[in-house]
View: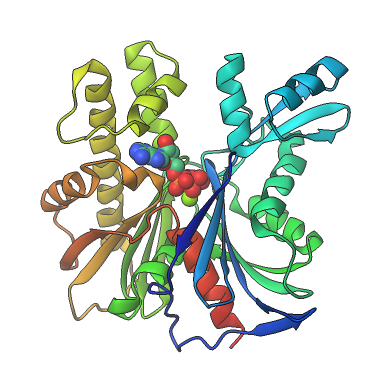
Length: 359
Ligand SMILES: Nc1ncnc2c1ncn2[C@@H]1O[C@H](COP(=O)(O)OP(=O)(O)OP(=O)(O)O)[C@@H](O)[C@H]1O
Ligand SMILES: [Mg+2]
């Protein structure tokens, strides 16, 4: 219950100079070194290589529930077959299991991150995040195994403290036995998805807390920024106008609606905020490209790739294309496409970078 393995193949994995990979043998078992970790507001994902050189992505919700540690609660969790850990006299249910149990209790889950960064409202939630990260990453394949982890870029529309967030997770990964390197989230999208374009183009991650953008030129991030709006922003705003709890809006949004043809008042509100988020993101990209003094000269039109859970909704890429048509960009756009596995792109890009770093 809760976590999911997203099997994948090797097709997206082509770092700049080709990967040979590092294979370590321990107790007769081959272990592939180097891992990618996507630390997100909604989901935490680890991309690791299996012994055949393919990629396996493990995903867990970034959420938990704490329940009083009495005998009654313990037996209830055992009866419901819900895994838990004991932490300072409380029973902690992690990740996807916490979501399922929260529905049974009619109680919200606790979420350690907000708007792309560690939440100041959930200071004591860090050990829970460490447990989730440990669960998806597993033990290091070798001491100080390289682990690239995603960090958001600073936002154009909000003061936020990336430095603290980045340092916190670097320290946590070190404690878990890894050699951590932060990687910008949008940059990771370009590593996972733009191999065919020589890692040149625009990678966008539509997350729960933020949208992260990176303009890359031959693997180098020329421009990175975020907007402090994402899936949660859509849910909260639609919930406000509809007078519904935002968890209900999230449920409707993720249940298979199409933002090109919303049905009923609830879906209409979601579609309006979705289009607004896409348009707002594109306007910010245009503005930053206009300002960009250090931008490379793109001789050819550039591709835009969209990833992240927010891009999974039906009609997303069509609405995105419509909104691109409305904006006059200072550089020519070749095309717009979805990532191959949008939810996994960031973790896979981090893995590609980790493996490349060992060559
Ligand atoms: N099928 C779906 N349809 C619509 N939205 C979805 C779907 N699946 C997930 N989402 C939304 O995607 C968002 C989570 O995406 P993702 O896992 O990429 O975010 P994150 O990386 O955890 O967040 P961030 O990068 O902002 O810190 C949530 O807002 C969720 O509601
Ligand atoms: Mg993300």
